[in-house]
Image 1 (cartoon, rainbow, N blue to C red):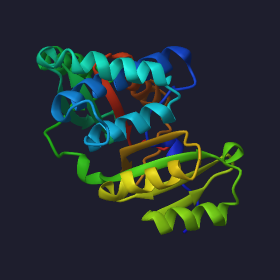
Image 2: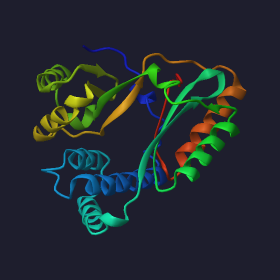
Image 3: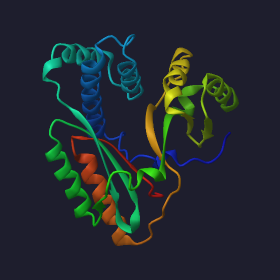
Image 4: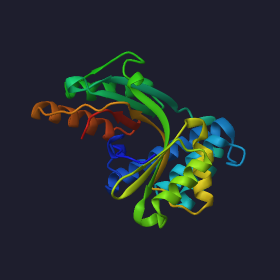
Length: 242
């Protein structure tokens, strides 16, 4: 079950950067608002909200910020009008890119995403044009130093909880699940007191593409940076072999 994994490349992240961490909290805040609108403010009766709270904790979002977000959303249900939208396209040399956004203005978001692709010499495609190259999986990342468990013990616990796969890296462990089993695996690890660096349902490339051309690399980086800086963009997935 163990082996080399490129989970560090799955999403274009800059979470160690303070500004990026602030954006993650904004993203989670929007997700909380939508979840509360759809299923109410009680995570015990709202599976979606419970999963977002777990994601918030994995990203070290303070508990009072989480609770404040839930209360604000509960009192503002009628004014929440965010929508989830997904865009698919190609970067330089055919790099596959998927963009998940949560927006209150789809026209604005579509224009910004299209502009990001264009400025990096890429192009937006039709729905489904690249998503077939990815697998939707629950993914849990655990810091090896913070865990304190032997790899084999953690692997067995994860598999017993319903995980599909377990991968080791030098500094981290990766646990993969079927999306439908993600929450039960996450909760099992949480109940066992295992700290998680991240826990979310994500899109994992089936294959990776290397870029050696300097111009193509700069253009791809421009696309990813512009998307990362857009407040409406929730996540960016790609199959670039960094």
